[in-house]
Length: 419
Image (cartoon, rainbow, N blue to C red; front, side, top):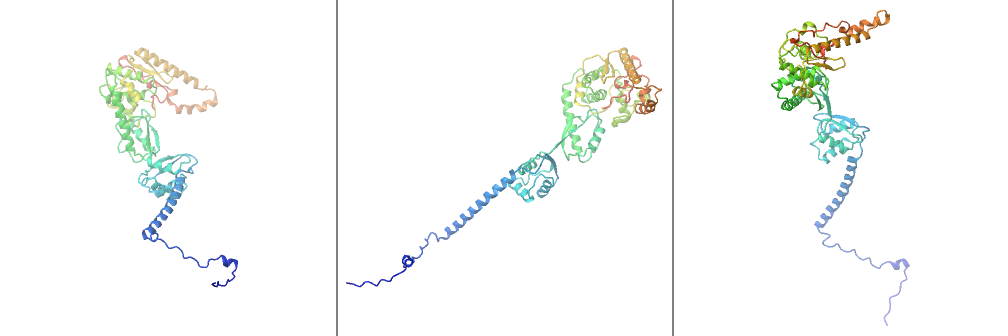
């Protein structure tokens, strides 16, 4: 029988421990391959980049889409030749955005709008997001300012209005020819040059005049578009009422047919002051017969050119006047005119107007023995010098001359309708 080795007693802990620690497993040849190592590194980097990109995307989306700080709509001017940093500074200063300028620049690059930012005056809506702000500037939809050119102004008066408007830039090189501008309401962005405005008004006038000339009454004695504009400018200055234009035009057309002088007071004024447009006082008796190329009390037929810039309505009324036999018209005291075919009836209408004006004058004059109103009377006379001593009616002329018509028959100052 063989002998067994002696048993050496051990503690429980020592009994549980292995008698020999096994060596670690060897790495496979594949794991030690340099390509695998590089691939694992690249994969790890990609994971990190994806996580970073996701976080950046989330932050960027929140930045672009979050409501902006504007508490109400606001108009902001982006100056010409402003860079992206300059634009960011302007928007921050005006309270349109509240992000770091570099965030704005990064957003512009992210939206691929780096080369599409346009200068101009923009309207940003309340709480506009950064995306909306950038889109507004990229679209270039600048604020359009409505500019109204009233009918009946001369070219010089229109140029003066444009010069006084700070929306426009530059200066007008020369006063446009009378009657070549179309009075209307236009819209222009801030910074438009005044020459560009003039060109647009001229283009609009050419287009409208061509359309109206095509639709004209071919029986008219007017032989050219220029003559149409000339007579329309007289119609424009004679009445401001839409319901009277075609009838006023008919009076002048009928006079042209019968080779009568037009006898229009606004032509006297234009002959005296030209493009200034307004005389600033009543027409003197001596000025009625004062020779002038434009004075239709002296010349036969139409003046050599327009006396103002007529609007579309006056052009249309002159191209297609009412079918009447009227040869005279005079103010009726209510803002309109009384039209007649004969001189005798015209004289009666004039007398009626004089009587009405005299009655109004008498009703407004205070009794002479009342001391308080007497002190105020001189001031009233100063503001209306013709009211107290109306001029002798000049319509009492022989029928062949036709008598004066239009607003010049009034005795209140000024005697001619000027708008």
